[in-house]
Image (cartoon, rainbow, N blue to C red; front, side, top):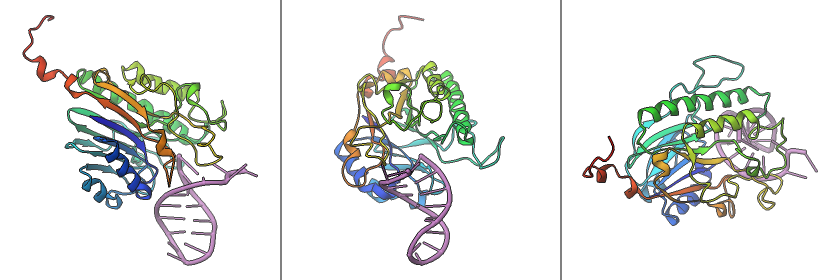
Length: 283
DNA sequence: ATGTCTCAGTCACTGAGA
């Protein structure tokens, strides 16, 4: 099974090349971010004609997440527990939620499409929102992992964080000023690794960016960022046989500014059923 | 020069967001 994540930067603007890629690359599940539309505006037909069913969460022209799958989608969630909202000039609880998280179960895998808030700048309210959002997500992931230690879980999406200096090729990012590279953001990312969620792509693809700004010839100059990640629980990581970044999707007509990130899974390694007949050696 | 791209609102542009 092939599972991927892609910040598509408007599904309506490039549905053709996205579905073409899904079919060409034999992708089973795609987590999308920045669909930039409501569910009723989502171009369902090309996906359904190609054999995918859809879960869509979009509230307006901003943000928006969706998941396309060749296998049935169950247990759809449009927010994680305690997810904070945002409203300009307001603080506190119960602010309106944005469409940035979508959880589903497919083939026994728990999968989330996540669009982490951008942060804008270190002194912007969106930066605090970003850190709150990540801390709350980590708390929910901790609870879920404690309750489901044997289940494959993947948090997939645009994290808007470059975890290491090697992930930063865009010279416009200034330490101490810019988001995506600040120590609190990197610490927020590391919290997920402390929970036992690991970047399942990097072992197979150690180098490379996943995003290049449209401006300033960032792609031709290869001045990008690695900010799109698939973090898997140990039971998920145990299924991974290969992974990669599809850099070519930044080329050609009307690309997104992000490219897809793909993992190959061998679900036959998921031994739950097969193990039932084996003798219990421990415990 | 935020030098590009997308969308909404409203109808050739501007504002917002990234």
